[in-house]
Image (cartoon, rainbow, N blue to C red; front, side, top):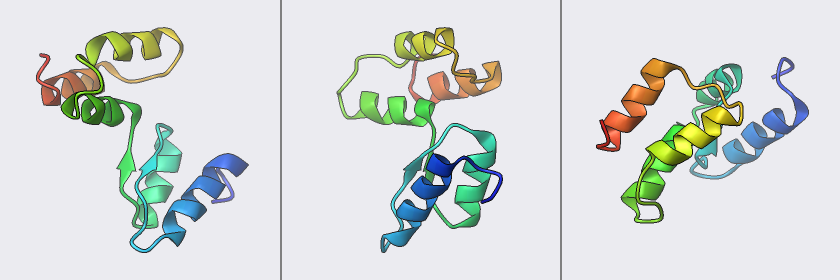
Length: 90
């Protein structure tokens, strides 16, 4: 975990300290991989938006996903298509 930032490492350590381990929200590819090595369930921003739509907290994923990308969050075009497909929006 030395290659991660302090906050990312602490988040992974905290999530893995629960029994069962808590899911963790991570978008950074390296942090996601390390979290998975610790046996954690990793949810990205797109997955979180899908869960929020499913629970009725938001009406649609696409507008918020577009705002996140415009603000600088990198999500590849194939990942966006998959997120929207799973959310039933494409």
